[in-house]
Length: 253
Image 1 (cartoon, rainbow, N blue to C red):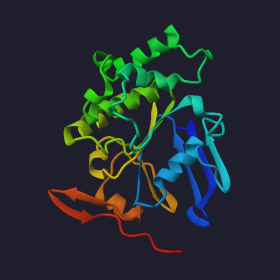
Image 2 (cartoon, rainbow, N blue to C red):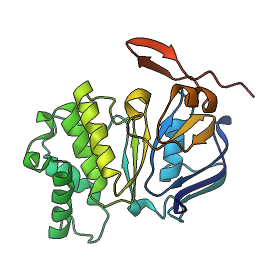
Image 3 (tube, rainbow, N blue to C red):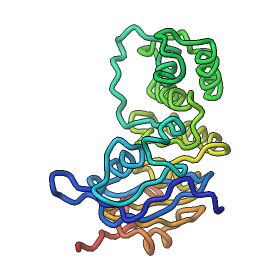
């Protein structure tokens, strides 16, 4: 597929003079379902924030849909890790989803019928419309995560970024969520940061391993041999109930 929706070249980023990402180069084709994996502190979330325009690189070029990340903001959706929301706050599921339309269209504080129609469509897509009047404190972790995804979808994005979306979801909810994302991937390019390599391997189309630099592999499945050869960063997985390491540690330097 020649239609590249993400193009990153010679990307460098540091915090307080400490390098976090160095010489990052990769492209993502439209329709990809890409897992971003790697060790804690390796730069996964930083890379995501750079693509979203939440951080500025020290040097290098990022193009999202042919634009700078900030110019493309209305064409992408984002589900951050550990969304901070007071579950005791008196707000409904529909109100949370409508937050995704803030700053779009009319300057009026009241949401237009078009905004409400878009929110309903997003909730229906995730089979959550029947909960639209529910208080968010009444939802399970998996249901609440679907609401946050609906909030990201309400702008009809072409690319959806998710940072550890199953972190607060039980095992059954995780499986349901990955199945949902696979369905969404029929029309939306998806990039997902996760440690859940084995669960993701049934759904992803490509992998980017991040540990200061990025190794990208365009593959429809994640085999142990492929990972061991192509992604030298530490990731522990569980196979047949036994933990073992399939990715050796990056060499320093």
